[in-house]
Length: 164
Image (cartoon, rainbow, N blue to C red; front, side, top):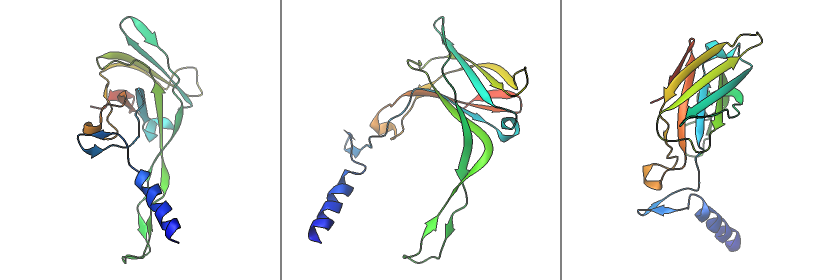
C-alpha cells in the first residue's frame, strides 16, 4: 500500500510541471500558429466548407481550414453540496462552426485575409476580405513565454470581423 501511495505521489508530481519562468511553473502546453474561425449559428446552417487565403509580403497562402461543430459547456449539475458530492458538466453543440488553419511563419503585423464559406449552391454563402494583425499566443500566461502567433475571426450576419 505504501508503494502504491508513493507511486501516485510521483505521478502527480509530474502533472503541471514544466519550464520554470521567474519561479513560476509552466505547463508543457503549446500554441499553434495560424488563424481561428468561429461561424455564428445563423450562418452555419448553410455552410458545408470554408476556404481561406492569407497574404503578406507579396505572397499568399491557402491553408486547409476544416470546420467542426462548435460546442460550449452546459450548465453544471451537482448531486448535492457536501464535500463527498459530485458535480459535472456536459458539452453541447451551439449550432455554430469552428475551425483553425495552420499558417506557418504568420507574422505579427497586418495580413490580408480572404474567407469564403461555401454551401450547396454555386455562390459562396460568405466571401469577405479583411486586414488583421496576428498576435503572440500565451496559453500558459504571459510569464511562460509565447507559444505561437494567432488571429481569430468571426463570421456572422454577412460580416467578417477580427477579435481584438
